[in-house]
Structures are given as C-alpha cells and as structure tokens.
Length: 193
Length: 193
DNA sequence: CCTTATCTTGAATGTATATTCAAGATAAGG
DNA sequence: CCTTATCTTGAATATACATTCAAGATAAGG
Image (tube, rainbow over all chains, first blue to last red):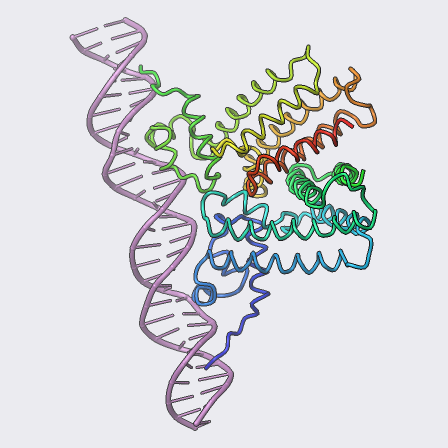
C-alpha cells in the first residue's frame, strides 16, 4: 500500500485562499490544481469533487478561526479588552489587502444562498456556531459587570455579528484605516455603551 | 428602418432580478434570454455582451432605488421618522424571500471585487452616491436638532451604510422578523443617541 | 525482493457557456 | 407599394470547465 503524499491542511488552506479570492463559481478546478500543486485525479480521489473541496475548505477555515478566537477570548480574562483586540485584528485584516481580508463564510453565503442547500447549511452551521461563541462571551461580560444587562448576550452577539458582516463588506469599497477604525469604535460603543 | 420592439426598462429589471438571485457568474446568457424573452442576438445588439447587460442592470437598479429614496426622504419632512420607515421597508424586503431581498450592489461587489475593475468601479460609484445621499439627510437632521452633533453627517452615514450591509447579510441566514427588527432598532439607537 | 494495494499523473471526454452570424421579418420614408 | 435600414431569430462556433480513467509510480507487508 501507499500513503498519500500531500499535506491535507496545506492543500485545504491553499484552496481556501483561492475560494476567498475568486469565489466558489469562479475558482476553477484548474486554479485549484495550481494552488494546491495536486493533479485533478488526486483532488478527486481525496475530496470527491469541487463541492467536496469547498466543504472541506470551509471546515478548515472554521477550525483555524476557532483556534484564533478561543486563544483571544480566554475564559479567565475580562471580555471587553479582548473584544477591542479582536476588532483591531479584523481591521488589520481588512486593510492588509490579501485574500484573507474577506470572510470565507460571509462571502460564500452571499454567493451560494438559494443555489446549493448542502453548502448553505454548512455555512449557516458555522456562522451560528460563531455567533453562539460570541454570545457566551457577552453573557460572561454581563455577569462580570463589564456590560450593563439591558440586553441579553444573544442580542449583543447578534448585533456584533451583523456589525462585522457590515464592516467587512464596507471595507471592500473603502480601505481607509481611519474610517474603518471609527466604524469599529462606533460599533464597540453601540455594544458597551 | 425598424424600431426595437422590447421595453428596455422591463428587460433590465428582469435581468436585474436574475442577477440578484443567481449572482453575476451564475446568471447564464441562456437564463437571461429566458427571463427577458429576448434572443441572444437582440441582447448582444442592445448591450454588447453579458457585462454590458450587467452594467445597464446596475444603472437601472440604482435609478429605481434613487427614486424610492428621494420619495421617502423628502426635504421638507423631519429625517428620523423617514429613517424608521426606511428601516422597516428594508426588513420587509429581507423577510419577503424574493430576489429583491438582497441588494444588487452589495451582493455584486462581494462577488466581483478584484476580478473586474470596470464593474467594481461602477458598483463603488453607486454605493458612494448612496452613502452621500444618506450623509445629506443626516446633516439636515443635525441642523434641525433631531440628532446631537457629536458625530458628523458623513460619519453617521458611514455607520448606517455598514449597518445595512450587515443587516442584509445577516438576513441571509436568519429570516426571523423579531430578530431583524431588534437589530434594526439597535442600529437606529446607535445612530440617534 | 517481490507482490499488491494505493496513490499520482495528465491526457481525454462530455457538457455548459458566451458569443457570432447569416437568413428572415418588419417598420419607416419616398 | 417598394426600398432599405434595422431588428429578430436561432442554429453554429469556439472556448472553458468539471470530471473521468487508464497507465505509471511508489510505499508497506510478507
């Protein structure tokens, strides 16, 4: 028997970047073979088809994001300083100009919504998981007295999620650091008051 | 000589809806011939190519939106009640479930950003025009004392634009009216107070 | 070292797509 | 009513794309 030679995580991260840059429809299999340095046969053997590659890339993306998120929002630390750092990191990403500046989940849901149920559901599940993770942090912030309890953790998480969708979309047309920081600041104060 | 038989506005609105539903890449010329009830030759004669149809559809979309906007934000009326009505109409759109629920400009910029400069610029120009129109209204609201002058009209317009991008994106995965209305309400209060 | 299961390679296939074009149809001007 | 410019029709073309597959390569087990 023979074992696969390629590094699955590397391949998926390369595919991920291609999908973020070009979108699902416009990322051709040829492009995927280029960025992964794998031939069609290997890709099809490993992931079934283009959709399989995409779904696997989504999982990889979410795993990476999750790791970043849990590292930042450590359960021992106060929430609000982490939130500020988080907003800063997103703005840095938006300004950087590389493919990572868009969120794969947000970009994809906008593209495939109503076209492919399986992909939509995978994206929704991940987006909901993300919002729930935020809600847990906001609940903790309320319990610890960092935020007034006029709104629930879920409500705050929903509002921030919406705000981040908007911030990332806004950054597509305006990459002025000052404007983006002001928006993030307004968003922060709409939450913490 | 002979005059064109089709109604240009009708054709563009049909194309517009197709693009909103399927996105630019996934809207095939075949689909466009179906929804417009025009044959390829006529479409190519009238608009040059698929990109030409798309650019014309964008203009039509913006013209329609502009008319709706100026009807709502009449220069004689106070701004805030109009803003509330405007938010309500967007939520109604989001919940309705038809293709109009997405904003053609926002959906398209997310799809084609970095792929086609001409389309990107057309979209950006329209998005900027929209934001400027909002800024004018907010300036008026500040002058009339409806909103405290702690932030400029431009800043408020930018924030609302971001919020609406986010709201529409959020509605893709969660069409719960209560949640969306709460988000719109939070957004409103983040602006007016 | 040989067998065998599995992986890799990349050319071949079939389908979908944007676009073209020549023939037919139709209205305006004389 | 005839001419002519322009529109309409829809089949044809060329290209791009996702996917398949058979031949070659390679590692593990005996």
